[in-house]
Length: 294
Ligand code: NAP
Image 1 (tube, rainbow, N blue to C red):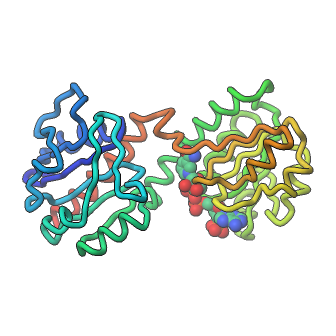
Image 2: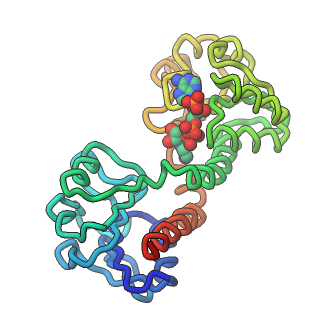
Image 3: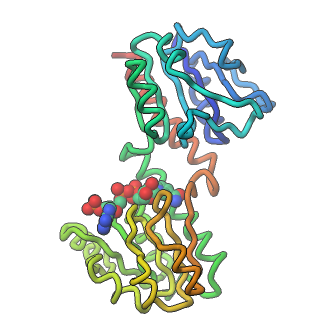
């Protein structure tokens, strides 16, 4: 239980509601900032402004999955209020206060460092990344169906990268009957691809390997589908780029060549906000409970 734990939840989207629901069930005291247009009420949770919060009692701060902008602004879909978290507010929290954010940037890192608090980047955790790969794979299927006129079954699909997302996407498309090849750069990954019953190729051969695919799904966060590679791909190939912005595709050249290349960020929050929220809520509840018992 999180009785007596004070958590400030600042900004966010529908995913935050699942977190608030979970923490409320665990008896936490919750200050919700940036939720003034939300009609739902939660036991133990109160809507507040940044100025109302008694920072000296805050044990944990939860920022949105996107963290904060490069100038310190925090997004919220439930308010028109402009939200900003400053070093001076963080400095007023108890020393043990932990900041949880999906991702971080220089601005947030700097704020946390100056206030001498600790930061947990939830999206970098293996457990969250693996759970999140499930709605990501489902969202990729949705996009493939929406943007092609062929079935996934029997389609020639290339997945680039065998990380947490690549593995789920490759397995899911294969289960739907696609002919899946996977590009990776490490020999243990090529071995794993073979073990999964899929066709491996080394990313150094990407140009030759993408010459005959209907769908190419990139998960590698580096420019890998270059103009050079695109120039030899069939014009009908759909590229779905899942890697974080700016993706791994030369979108300018793809457009010039008349190919459809889509950057598809944030699929879990789009196709399954409730599940994506529950994934975060479960892990966060465990982290806060562990802290409370330590
Ligand atoms: P990950 O587990 O780190 O996997 C990334 C893979 O890319 C690894 O296999 C890595 O190989 C490989 N890689 C990195 N740089 C490479 C390069 N230059 N050449 C060849 N391979 C390279 O990451 P993940 O969790 O799967 O996430 C992949 C991307 O998707 C990230 O950018 C993440 O932010 C994004 N993402 C997007 C969504 C969405 O909705 N669109 C959802 C979740 C995640 P090594 O292990 O050998 O480095």
